[in-house]
Length: 246
Image (cartoon, rainbow, N blue to C red; front, side, top):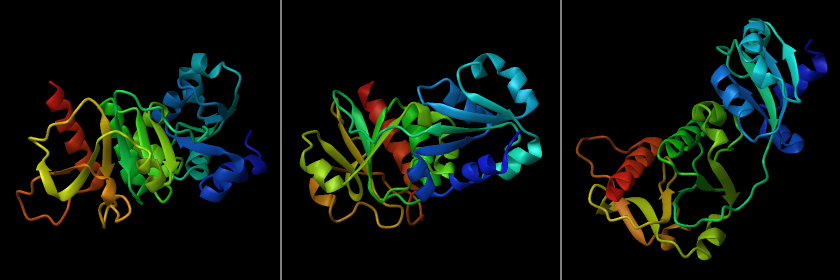
């Protein structure tokens, strides 16, 4: 049974301050919860409908607390009213710098929209990108909207928050930056590894990061739109990166 204290605790995790304080976050929806349970994240508690508990009894047998709840309770407990199957609380992972080898890594320069960040994580997962480096001002990886937008990909893509100037000043890999002027991404020559910088939704790549761009690339504009969504731009760049390797 859900106690008032447990309900208050879970609801508090919708706020970044309390997520950081408790080092815990919420995952909502059947698909995302299943992905979480199959991952190496430490799951503290699962709150789920009777049907979900029956269907995934074998996965739920591990040492974690499982609480049955009604669909109404689940909808009220989380941030998405459409969730009527499952919700889980898990522990955050340590913010560790990735050891980049022969690979490409995304760099997010002050992206503020958690939905965009979540979609970028999902897109990175699709194209086999395992690591993302993000500025300290980029939307929180553990924001419920970010987690939801990843559709479970948060379990397979690592994200490291840091001061980008410090990080890039020590970097020795090529740095590709999505700009209005640069090499046509459809004809750009990508090497075997590098960093791909995605700029802020409104302002693009920041003045502090711009000096570190060694390979400016651009997505050619054929119509009248003022700009591209950051997540869409990421997908286009990653698709052309994969084509260049064929």
